[in-house]
Length: 164
Image 1 (cartoon, rainbow, N blue to C red):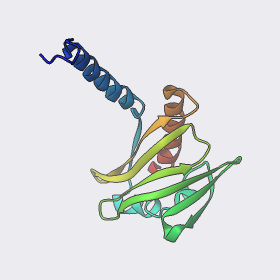
Image 2 (image 1 turned 30 degrees about the vertical axis):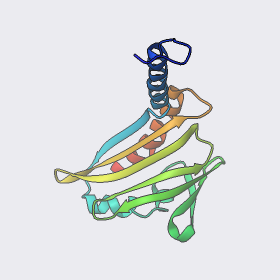
Image 3 (image 1 turned 45 degrees about the horizontal axis):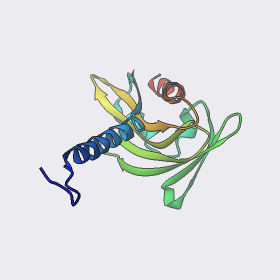
Image 4 (image 1 turned 60 degrees about the horizontal axis):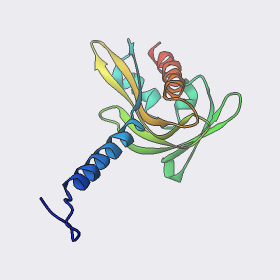
């Protein structure tokens, strides 16, 4: 055991600092723990579904709440105008046309989320395909449950249209 200059044992202080550090690390994890995933099957082949989804601004032609999409930043940023008002700006993080997926993040918008990163992908599924939309985020201005309900609804509304 170490003793400080006043003759006191430092072990309890070290244990307290270590325990506090562990608690701090784990408290930060829950703030990023909200995840939404929605999957639906389509009778269409993956290539056919990807033709609709793969165009980063094509979301305006298939998602029922998107009125208009405008690309900027060399096609890496899309500005979505929502039916009924509101705008969401999203940035393309990565895309893989061969694997039928892309990942994007929300830069700004009215949704009750922050640090939002999402991937939409099309997978082979028998003679058809599965469309999977997944996102991870923190709730912002709402409970985790309310933020999840909102994002789940966005995913379901879009994927169900694609699966028909």
